[in-house]
Every structure is written in structure tokens, then in C-alpha cells.
Image 1 (cartoon, rainbow, N blue to C red):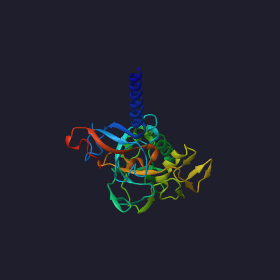
Image 2 (spheres, one colour):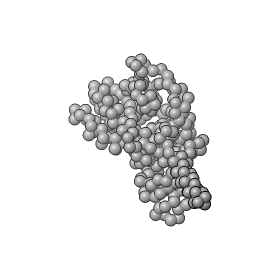
Image 3 (cartoon, one colour):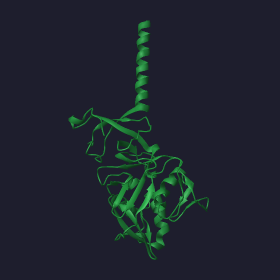
Image 4 (cartoon, one colour):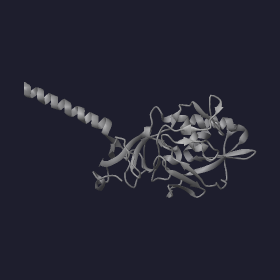
Length: 278
């Protein structure tokens, strides 16, 4: 009887330990995207380190993370990219592309579009509702120019009223400017050059208490002159130029990061099974 009791206790403890490891330490995931074909194929099964630390997510590590977009909040898709930018890193954006800490990065597949300036409020409301970031805004007396991915363009054309339809635009050269990937405690003072980059994540951090009207941040009707970030953010980049990553989502908060991919434990490429993923 005692032997049976000990056996039952050991089985229960084993189940408890395995459950804790799967919940808090290591998780198994199936890759459902071809965004990192150089290291993983669609359909591969991988083990992921779920224990966040100084090196998880790690620089240049392949990472699984959830979409940070508001429209994906109920059932966020899992995305796969390489973590190329850490909290506090500097992004330099130029007309020829961008770099992270002077390291050149792959440019996004985005195009410029023009819309009449008198319908700006309707455009901003639609972008906000669809959770599309406002990128590279340029304005003249009659129109404003924004940059969209192919998917965002399609989504915006469906939801915009016909009278507000956008048209392709010849993109004017941009001046180079620097941005900091936000980190907890980073004090940001809004300026016209970088505001479009930070406004979306500031609104998310404050659950909408801070709003962006296209020109300024405001809280309870008062213009905001400074903001201190409460989360760490990361810049994710995929091998596939058309894949969804930080070029389209912006900085990814730590709360959306699941962790570093450790190994592929089952997949079509037998040479990669049980080998560490870099």
C-alpha cells in the first residue's frame, strides 16, 4: 500500500513539474509562417524559452511574439522574427533605408499615398480604428502623404468612404532622423519628426488616456509635453521582406514577446532537428 502511495505521489509530482515547465519555462509551438525560411520552415515544431531575462529575448535571436495591434487583442496571431533592436538602441532612418546602431537593415515594402488634407480627421479616425500606424507624414496646403504596406492599403481602401479614397503618390526625399527604441523609464519629449513613431505605443501604454490627433499628444484636452515609457520594447525583423514585423508593427513591447526559439524538435529538414536555432 505504501509503495503504491509513493508511486502515485511521484506521478503527481512529475505531472506538476512538467506542467510548470511547459507553462513558465519552455513551450512547444508550431511554425505557421515562412517569415524566417533561412532557419525554420512552415510546419516545423519548436521549443521556446519562456523565461524572460536579460538575454531573452536576446539580440539577433529568433523570437516568437504576439501581434501588439489592438485589433488582434482577442486572439493575437503568433509571429516569428529575429530580434535586431534592444531597448535603448538607436534607429537611423534615411531616404535609402534604416539602420539599428549603425547596422543596415532590410527596408520595408511600403509605398507612399496622398489624400486631400480637408478629410484628415476622417483618415486619422479610420487609421486609429484599423490600428494602422501613421508613418512618414508630409503635408502641403492641399494634401497629406502617408506610407502604407500592401495589406494596409487594401484594408484602408475597404473601410474608407469612396469620397475619401487615397491615390498613389511620388514620394519626396526624406531627411535622415534618429529614434530611440523605448525602454522603461525613457523620457520622451514630443517633436514633429518622431511623434508618428511613438504615438501609437504611447496610446497603447495608457489604454487610450493619451490621444494623438496627427499633430500632438493630449490628455484630458491638454497638450502633453513629455512622456515616460513604462515598458521595454524590441525591434523585430524577418528574412521575408513582405512578412509582418516591426517595419509594419513598430516596436514590440516585452509583454508581447514569448521568448527565444531554442531548437526545432520536429520538421521537414531532418538536419536541423535538435540543433540550436540562431
